[in-house]
Image 1 (cartoon, rainbow, N blue to C red):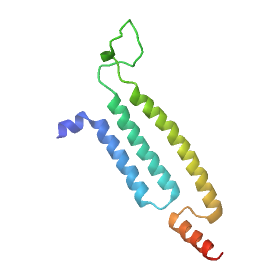
Image 2: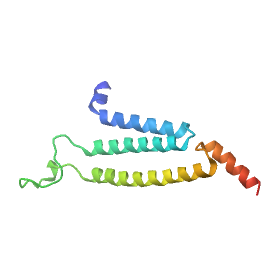
Image 3: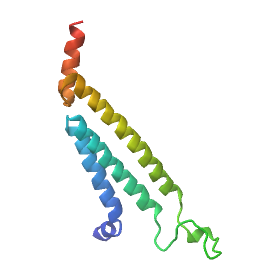
Image 4: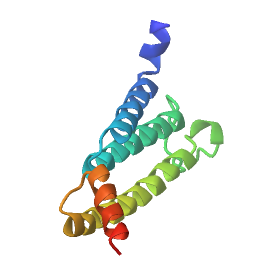
Length: 126
């Protein structure tokens, strides 16, 4: 068991990062903390994908020295998925930060329970 954990430490760290992000997302009520938790979860997923795509003693898929045997190269798909995910994650983070700024301007808090109560009171008074 310990030998497998030492051999696959990248996957263990990825699982740990995902778990930390998930717990942060689940238990914190502050919107910025939830956003940080989501980014930590994303980092765990990217580490997991990158570690699955890496094969020891293989090279990047750039043909050099006339070697065209595909078994000598690493699969480029996981790396491209990680890059695409990072771009999407940055975009989602930017939108969520903009939303947090707008919510703070309107309700003067980033606590989601307080925002819910204040919005419910505003709709009841109309």
